[in-house]
Amino acid sequence: MVGEKRSFNFPILFTARLFCRICQQPTKRLAERACGSFSRKIDNEDEKMSEYLIFRLKSIGQRTVVGSFLVAGALGIVGPATAWAADASALGAVPFEFVGTVANCGIAGSRIVTAAWLRGMGLSDSDGPNDPNNGLLLSKNGTTADCSSAGASIKGVKGMVVTSTFEVGFDYRNGGHCGAGAPRFNIDTDQGVFFVGCANAPRKPAPQDPEWTRISSAITACGSECFPGSIPVGATINSINIIFDEGTDAANNDTEGVGLAVLDNILINGVFITRPGGN
Image 1: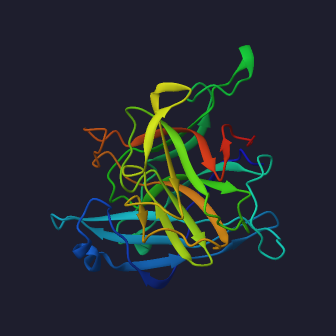
Image 2 (image 1 turned 180 degrees about the horizontal axis):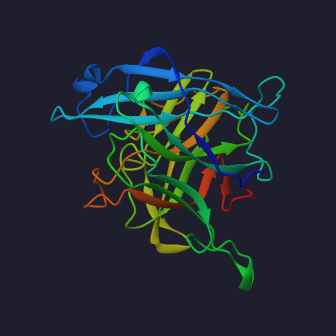
């Protein structure tokens, strides 16, 4: 079921080493942020959750933090790669919570994360007097170093081919957290894994309510919000996930570090996901 919430807490097998950065930090610091990634595949008749990544990040002040990055792919059968627009009926955002161990991160995770579609938290879903106003709550009630994250796995994207007009984005409620690294999109493709952050993405007031902000990024021509850069036209998507792993110690637009964000109208290639069961 698309609206189902999933939790993860299991041993991870370490794999290749990767690099990451915090977008506001100097590029010369990049080499200091190498770390081990890990992955494990879980199979059942409905889906395959794979490629769990952990990055150890070092800040300018030499304070080490650990962020957990989940890249999860839906199991599906697709034919030859072709470019197409997102199918509104097929897309959905399934909340998940990840809690890691010392073996995963070097620092144990805690059950301080929450991910859920909640009534009354979001913008109008245009359902008249019974409008549920669904919003996606992502919360990390503790430090960024804690090996845990909240997020949502985007269903229905496996096999999509990136075109020059492919955009991702969402509306977030003002006052919530919008950092360089969270909430962010993790986009796994046949050309590599790419990250699209919130803080540096193009923005404007959300059309439904100026107390919300809309961000959107053309992923083939994005700026500093993307790492390691733009996604090549023609890349085939394996999975897209939204990740929230910056905690109450990470302040950005929220000057005291609220450790949570409320999202709505999640944009995937021209289609908005507005509720638990998709559109």
